[in-house]
Amino acid sequence: MNNGGRSVKDKREIVFWDCMDSETLVHEDQDEAIEFFLDSMMKPLVPIGDQDLPETVEVKGYARVLAGITADDVLGYAFDELGSEYGYCQDEPTESQKKAAADFVEKFMADYPACEPVTTETVDTMEWIRENRPDWLEE
Image (cartoon, rainbow, N blue to C red; front, top):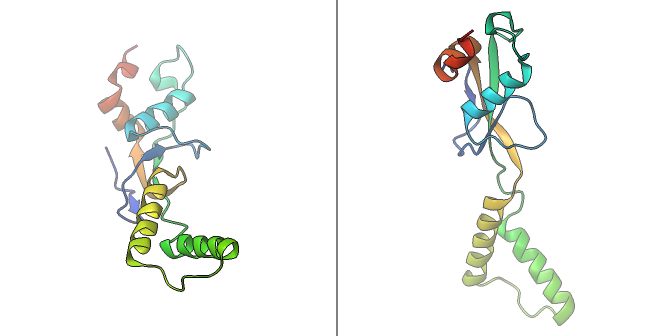
């Protein structure tokens, strides 16, 4: 695959790939995203040479968003809620509470579905077809 057009924002794990700026990300495999994109453009029963396909395909890799909340946010909310209900009886969180809040944020964000693009690769269409779907070349 030609990924000479690659740009990477960071090193987060890619969890989804997409070529269409889809509202819902479903392709966990880069080749699956490319195939879906190309297949959606192809006309049935028309030979590959007569298809109007782009020379290259841009495929984006998506990673989970970084925490939009912090352990301090969680602790602040908890202390405000409990303080207004039961009185402000604790000034600072304990180490155990800090660890619990940090663990909560980590686990919560690991399953939070929001993603953002972190890499973009440009793939040569015909090269990809030859390597991944040679059956499309058969007439």
